[in-house]
Length: 125
Length: 125
DNA sequence: CGGGATCCTGACGGATACTG
DNA sequence: CAGTATCCGTCAGGATCCCG
Image: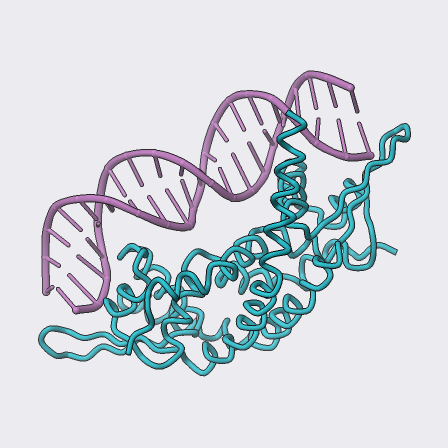
């Protein structure tokens, strides 16, 4: 018997949301950058290096909205804003790192599969 | 000491690739649809329900290129094409399901965080 | 049945300039 | 320093039509 379409979509809904969050271009890098403690805005930007100011702001805001990141403003001069992972954010590290280990372990096999696939595609043309 | 930007980006490269693959709109649903064995093209389409023909073709091709899915053509009339997870594709199920369990376990907490965040945002305006 | 080709739209994301 | 505002190009992804 086939799975019910509604159930499949419904069961996967939270999974798809968190995957959309974590599967975007920058979230994982930010999580890694905040792994070892709080960091300031430009500090994160420097660590990642290639992220634009805009996307850092947007991604941090999204992660804050999802409760993964906590933002703390210090009313100093010049202003200072710290970002850190919440308990929820830290707990996300584990499944992400497991996926990371899978990715690294199978990186070569994937690359090989891609080469073979591309070669077949080429010789068909 | 801060992590080296180059190392951070380089270490995360395979992780980001597989997250981009698995974090797209449909890959996870396809993996789940193929969990219990091979399925035909329109069978997958029916199970997922809301996916367009185009995106199903594209996503399946991408997953085939990455070595996650195997495509088998039967020269019958009408033609029949089966898709199934490869060993690599099946092995991906474990980390995905772990992430899935995390997502489901923390779904409520995330929703609450979003509500609070949106409420604060609203009252600021 | 299982696609390929094409058109169209909105969302993602980079660059730049400005502000408190 | 830590953003916000704006402009703009690219591309994911839906709808539609066609073909072996």
